[in-house]
Length: 85
Image (cartoon, rainbow, N blue to C red; front, side, top):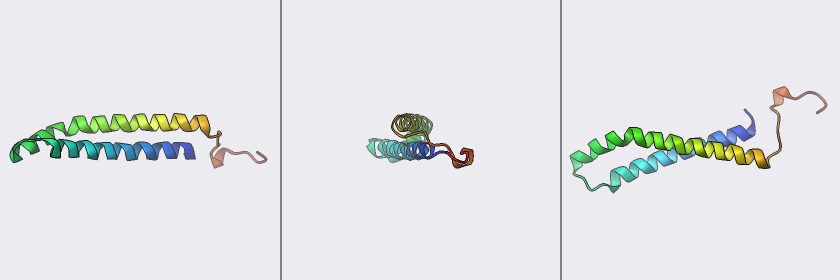
């Protein structure tokens, strides 16, 4: 894995976790439901929130990889380098 891919993968993964935690916190603490109903609504929303977080994380991964490919020079992985280059 090239450094460019590692940076993009890390940014996408961190963004996915942060968006998921923030969205679940907003759902849980932002609602004005009773105590028993809040658990039902949050458990129903778990799937769509996870899907949304993964989509945002993938978008950040793609964007970071794209921007890094524009500004960083092409770096070959160490095992593919030939002597003298």
